[in-house]
Length: 409
Image (cartoon, rainbow, N blue to C red):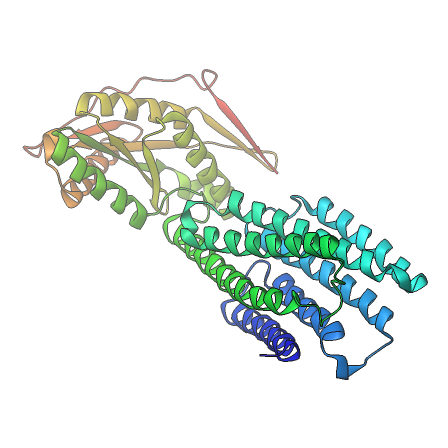
């Protein structure tokens, strides 16, 4: 395959990658870095066509070479930015890339003013591009994360191989005096084939990373309550099921605390649903701050919350529930000049009393919760195997003791 055909193949593939990414971003919506990636491929393809297809004869050779060099380094900058945005590291090492583009701008200007500098410009171009792609590869290696699997490593490896080929091209050009911008140089066909392979791997890697990131985001939205940031009912069920399996293997206990806020409807009626939302967010914060790191907190819907307590027997779960009740009772929210407060009724169920099973734990804690509400609210009630419940005497807490403040505008 002759050199011109390889250049045209590269140009068409770059255009194809750009088009596929734009169509994918439009269909999926909101793909981070898609526009940068598409622009990078279009500029890189145009850079090759300017100097690689002699019969185009778009401009005098040195002007075409200067513009081609700028397209190449700006395309590499855009490719770096595409991965940086995708991996949510938008500002990272951008300054290095911009500085390298500045170096190339000076070199291109010198080529236009002094045509004899073409050889030096070619070496500098390969060196600058090699560094740019190496920096992008390091970014991908460092921040791909476990959730994207081998796609990150494949992409980083492709970028690093391309960077190595560029640096090797610069070294060989310096060693043997080959003009790197000269498309008839013997090293060019090998480099063009390397470009085809690594660009394909990079495009595949970028789309794989995009898909993996989108999957992670969708999974996060599927299991997190939008208002409070807590787990939702579906996610809690998965956590409980895993904990139940672990308890069966280790012969340990798991407890569930069901919480229903007292008087949130009154808050909504008096101060509006926005105040109720602020109160729900404040309660969610209190619950997360009070429980242990290994515990899980979920919003079940409306003003109901649930706390999963791994490796916790009934007595210990009751102490946790009582502490949660006190923290919620002591919570004060200042909303637009108005003081908003609430209390909570709590039902506690433990596997060492009610048995191991998602529905058993939920039904038992629900039954205890509804009894707590029937018996006067603002109290903790424990579910019992025989269907009876015990309720520890709630301690009266002074409004001035242990209060939390949560300012909301």
